[in-house]
Length: 354
Image (cartoon, rainbow, N blue to C red; front, top):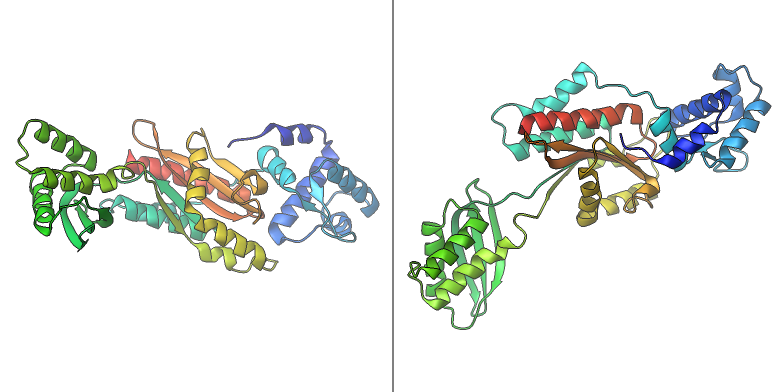
């Protein structure tokens, strides 16, 4: 689990009494979502302290930036800095139960396609954590089965590529002057007959070799159409990551002991629509040795919605990072349970792809 230095310094300033009061406040807040008052801790915390003594400690914790009071007469809530300190230095992790492990592994049965397995696992992680589950995988490098060109106008055509896995993708293509429907048909026949079974990068390399050796048997315009058709994907095919998000509905369901903050949820759902920024955030977890936790403003993307992201990389048989799996939820989530769950999911996926 990746940590930061500032909360560690704050933790070192606390004596045993302050640590215990802080821990009980965080535990109660994560369970209820409500501010925690000194009288509540005095009656039920087993501290043997008066409300006045507890209030003095709470004031010290507030001055350290670990607690905040939402209203003058209310109890205290942990700040994002306080949650970070709790996660890094005080939390006692709870490993997934046998039933939770079985649920996470259920979608990884032999014979299940990789993307389907990832989708199922992400959905299971979402359901168990009551957060939105997500997984990022590297972009699929398409293998050509068949290509066709559909003329739309003298200057434009639709290029349809059928991959070896049955996937279908299309791109709009600007045509050079003089390209006729017969030219496009010849280009499609050449790609489908001579380049099928190759990736786009391999097909481009094969085309260059055959043209250089004068073995392509294509006129100049047809060569141009073939190259343009392949290039329509080549710029992003290898680099484009695939992002799977499941369980957004959990973000708008009622929370135990509290009510949904509709404005926060609206902001969070808006943030989830920014796929490019979300991918950049997950990319930052690729280089981590362990699970990374972004709490509130630690992530620029989710700073306004006050959300937390827990993400862990998973690896191939050679040890290299392949993708990232994780969850997104409110800062008030069960870190002790969810962090080990994300970590276990990452390790399970690593076994699947090894």
